[in-house]
Image (cartoon, rainbow, N blue to C red; front, top):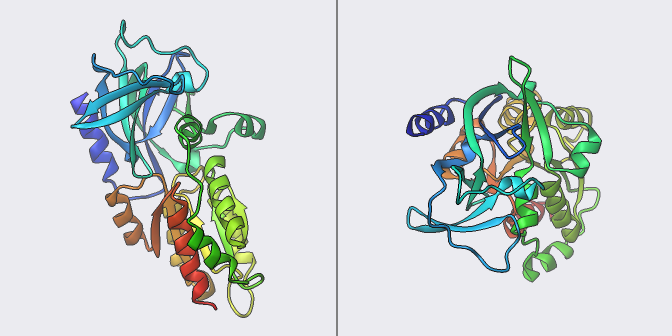
Length: 311
């Protein structure tokens, strides 16, 4: 396990080149799933001492002491409707992850291996599957074995809950500005849960927007919507992890574009991979800002600051 985590660390520090660095693992259905290594803090065997949390969601196993901090452990398979892990009588593992500045433990049957895939080889599932479940993408190994990539953000939102309230002062500030036809946001995110929070925030502020679940169609829209005065978009908010083209590659294409009407648009990377190293990498790539997901006040504050410059 130590050797595996050393490899995770090494791969997490590779330069971004539209690559998906993932740790694959198994759940009770014996199917292979994958999680981006940038979200992983450590993989550990499930400890004996798990403190049960009464009256919690059925997928919440309890809490463990991880490096002196209480971390909630979620049975990932149970959250998906699979049989719960019998962690007291069999060997199991916890993938300790960071999502949007919070730490959770995802209990799995067993970790498998590290896999390096191009985002171009990561596909969206059929629309019916994507809209009704937790599968956000698929990729395949050379032997044809599928690796399923889950919408962990949606799952965590349903199990733990997401605060989507905006401070009253920010709401009043946004509602006091009328920039229809002047200020428009381009939103790019393949997670339905993240899309919902973003668009809800924009709706409350009275901001116009267009939403795409992939970077390439969003980039095409950006190029095709230019006017003599510039882009119709005042702000771009993009996820990092997306099938086809990731947010880092998208950022490079925008910021290195030959047309200043494209490259000058303020671009914000918006990710659940909110640790400091990813903020630094976002700046190195050329992003103008980086904000964590599921923080509506941070999102609203940034949008309002850009709107105020046009008033």
